[in-house]
Length: 115
Length: 111
Image 1 (cartoon, rainbow over the protein chains, first blue to last red):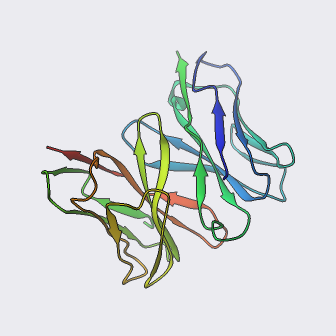
Image 2: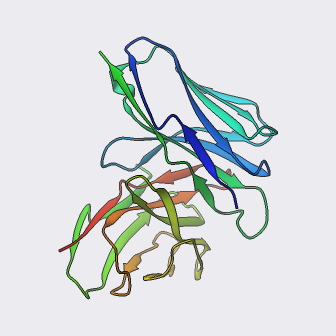
């Protein structure tokens, strides 16, 4: 069964710092990986989607990489701002079989950017 | 604007009562999902539907029921058989390109 782990569970950084969030998964036979942001009491906002054939995706100050063979993805946030404070979740879609429509989520990394 | 609408935002359930959470999307997505989120546990899949009139159980389907009579709608009923229903419930839909989009959630509390 696919398991997704995000480390650290919480991270606090000063404003302006570059940072990396980590996501690892146990089964490398994934279809894609998606990063989300969740503000307290709110739903999930999609940040980046990486297909299994891709190595990275970029959107503004965000860059996500995927190393499928090692079961890892990173989300790089450049020049962090207090507005980036939120919980960041990664989710993998299974590659094939009965579970291929499902997403498996990590528990998230809670980011605090200190002004 | 296209998106996913969940209602209500807050819902209170009495012991032994069934309640229904609404999820509507105007994104023309085929697949829809219900997740439950508890503190420290991450998101867990309750039910999902790939097409109209078809749905599949997820990891924690016991005590829940769904229907998919229309492409736009995927309501979730929390039955009295669900012994610990207090949680944050999230509905999602997915494109053919596999990007998933989420609603703003419904917080259910047992009183």
